[in-house]
Length: 135
Image 1 (cartoon, rainbow, N blue to C red):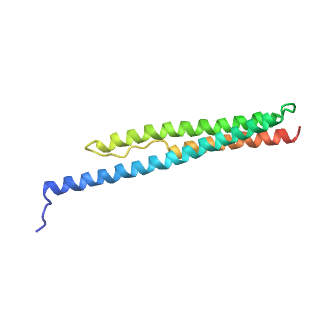
Image 2 (cartoon, rainbow, N blue to C red):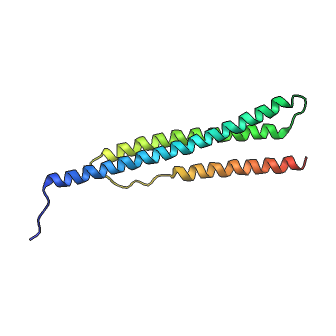
Image 3 (spheres, rainbow, N blue to C red):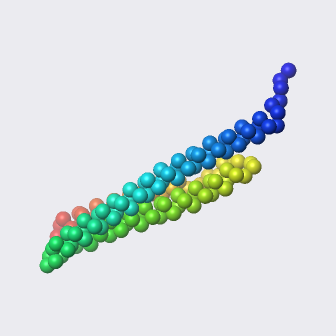
């Protein structure tokens, strides 16, 4: 004779599952914060180095300095975009977890979006370096 678990045990299991999902969402958000902070810091570092080089060479102008500054700004913009998107996605996930019925909802991958952004930044930097090497 099989026993049906009491109503309370099913609610506890469901609530614990929701808590695990919430904790996983928090860990994911923290990972995105670290990633975005790295992108922003890297972009800021590039910009500051370029500004220092530009200031030390007042009479000599290089087009590559402007390219490097744009590269730094692109990293900052990508990191800021990813941070905003991760915060919005996190809030949506928390709202989704709180619903009584949890159904899988496919969505665009934020990691893939950032990877595509990095591909474009890398291709832009590569093209700029190749063009400047032939001058």
